[in-house]
Image 1: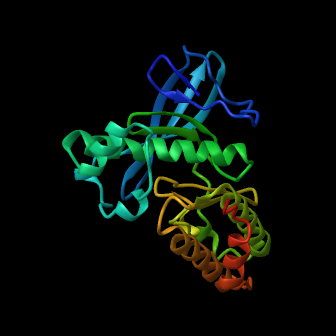
Image 2: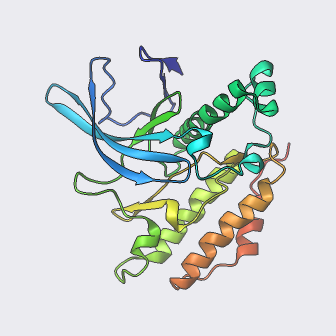
Length: 252
């Protein structure tokens, strides 16, 4: 992990970074359009260019607490630590400085989680950088439009939902083995491009054994997907899948 000239933390992972990524300091990022408005953040499409090279990326910008639609975040923040006692105390006490740190922690937490999952070859967008309350990441889609969400392709008879379920199950196993629970997983935050899933939106993710709600969140994630795929004709049992995932957790 290194600090770039603009104050952003750039990801350097064991897994080879994408060959399309432009990393030179003199590259120019140009905002093209707004992509999505969420409860806690807005996503924007950017183009990064350098000479005759260019690629698209997403800038996810978190709002401050007063402008967010998601305020009941204590259950997700439980157990999180920055490693700095003074900062952790400020956030716990809810001081003005602490609340600002909380806002920025959402972006940094999502970046770190994406970085960890990318390293493990999980199906997530590549995390490019994070600074303040903004995360830059891989754009999943093309110039015309972003890749559709799983919920948006539910009525498409040409989709192999069994194959998509198997990808989701593999991703859940990878995440659980790493000690990561998405904690808000559903067909609304899984993108599908060329038959490949990409799981997005990790700000509320929790670490197993560090959050007292970890198993509740994990079971809920499983139930959301089992219910969705069940309606698409793919049979799975929530408790069986949950038990399989729990068996992959290292409790040492």
